[in-house]
Amino acid sequence: VGVGGREEVGGPMKRRDFTLQQLNLFDGEREARILVAVNGKVFDVSCGRRFYGKDGPYGAFAGRDASRGLASFRLDTDALRDTYDDLSDLTAVQTESVREWEMQFMEKYRYVGRLLRPGEEPADYTDEEDLRDTSRDN
Image (tube, rainbow, N blue to C red; front, side, top):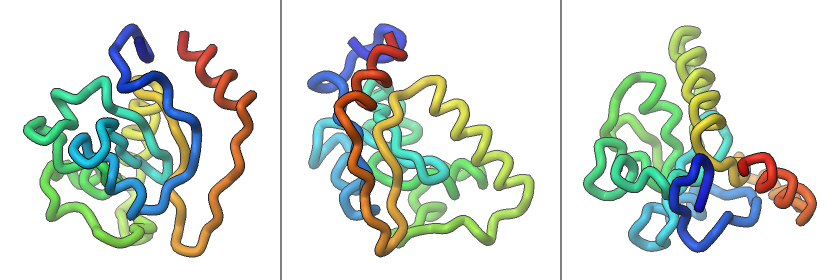
């Protein structure tokens, strides 16, 4: 059972960082888990499969960086980029919207890592960090 008593896929995911290409695999189809990035943070939204799964209203965000779509209130793949998106062209209102979405995701879903910029190296997370985060959620 996951955050807030919701079901998780195979227990908590070990914390790690993701390239955009790695994130793309976690769309609920190629990998059972569904991950979504918001403002550089990656969240496991598998417990919200009816929303983020293939036929869900937010299904376009599965395995993707949803920041631009959330900022512009667009739920289709046209609002998303296939390359790393630094969001530098967002308006102040859109940037604030992304931050608000990030806070909502932090409250509702398990944070599993960061979305890496091109050339950025992943962090080496310790088991203690995973245990601390898991105990916080219970």
